Amino acid sequence: MDAIFNVLKPPKMTSHDVIGFLRRALNTKKIGHGGTLDPDAAGVLPVFAGSATRLLEFAVEGRKEYIAEFTLGAQTDTGDDSGEVVKTLPVPQFTQEQLLAVLARFIGPQLQLPPMYSAIKINGKKLYQLARQGVEVERIARPIEVYKLELLHYTETSFTVRVACSKGTYIRVLGEDLATALGTCGTMSFLLRTQVGAYTIDKAFTLQEIAANPDGCAAEPLTAVDALPKLRVNARQAARITNGVRTTLAGTADGRYVLLGPADEFLGIVRCEQERLQAEKILMHYAMPED
Image (cartoon, rainbow, N blue to C red; front, side, top):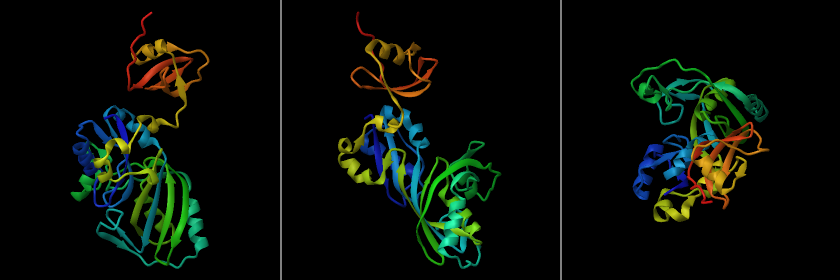
């Protein structure tokens, strides 16, 4: 089955567990997810099956949105409330204006240090595997961008925000940094992912719904790259490009395109340089038409 499933991941289930469930439900081995979601978190987890797995990178690259709650005064080793408390600090009094001012400082491009409890690999080992062994290694801060940080609710010891951010952003770390800026420490106590690229929570399906009606829950692979410009070609051009032949298409600007066949078939992704098209990811090979 060549399709994408907008999964509503439940809490207490890993992203790997979701893949295992759907591998059995869909009876397919070729399957993967677009962006790991923490076990305690819930929300949107795009899952790609069949040839659609070739488009996984586009889901990972996409904008992400979350609703997150941070509780102040204690910090855990995992960054969320499933971990062991490693630091406690008093929580200073703050006004809504002071909190909004702190949030505003974290909007925009910035560097973020990945947490030890993450799936990043160093020397072939995932950081969380090392963390569970009590090993801490040096990490390099990575560029991220926070597009939106909207305050939804706050109390004397907690606050809830809506976050829109780039790939690679760790919301747990963002919460810890915000707590530090408020003069205390903190831990993420709730996380709901509401968007990954084109996939939003209002159109997500539970695992049970997908297992009961896969066809009814499936999204077309084209939805993963809907933000890219479309380029339609004729049958001869489609055959050449999808079979690896660089093809000139006069007047085409440089860049990456969704390649559509003469009947709007989604053939794959191509890149254009100096009006010459080169296949980048081909999902469907087109047969050369007979003269």
